[in-house]
Image 1 (cartoon, rainbow, N blue to C red):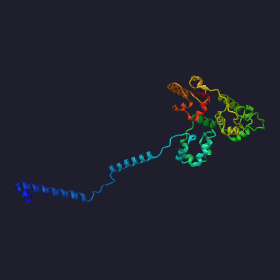
Image 2: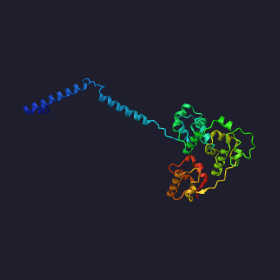
Image 3: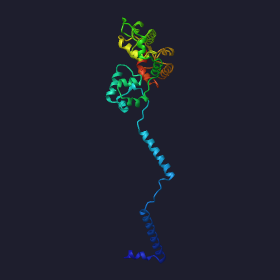
Length: 299
């Protein structure tokens, strides 16, 4: 009872103040209640500002979607793995055909060869071939072949050969006359083959024949159908740690730029313990590693 009566101990002025405060609180609550349940104001979505803002949002969404897609960067199709092939849309059978072909130490040097080996569809080839990146020497070779291309029928007409007894079917022992027994190989090309063979100190891989300047792939295929590597050549190797700059440049697969990178790397590491360290050099042509090391050793 004392608690109830204590509220009336305030004087009249204080009680009026309390009542006025209560009225203000009630009015404020009414405004909040009415505002919450009032109908939402309709927004004109055709306003230029809103349209421009929406376009910006759509543009950012499109960029995000594009970034979320897996990008395809230029690559050498000779080194496609199972995972990479699946990403590109190749079936397991198509990937296996390529891997089986590569196990023979052969390379595909054009998109046409890639399709011939893998047997992929034209649509898939057109989709992924723009990203093929072949070594510069392969590109130059293809350009030269195109420039000096001669139709097969013309070759057959120009070089109709009589049956000739071949002295050896070993490509490293065959003579110029032996090579000329192949339709499409005349005196000029046979000399080029012999000259390039001497530069290489002998063919270590059969597909090195495709590197002979101006020799068509179709003609080279005919040569390799008869001539094989029966015995690997004995190549004179030089120590990568003591070789001089000019001497290293004589390596048929090393140009001036690569030679400089190798010497810079050798100075950096002081001494190469293993030839595989060459692959640590930035920009080193991995597809030529097995050819370059034919002439080198690390001691």
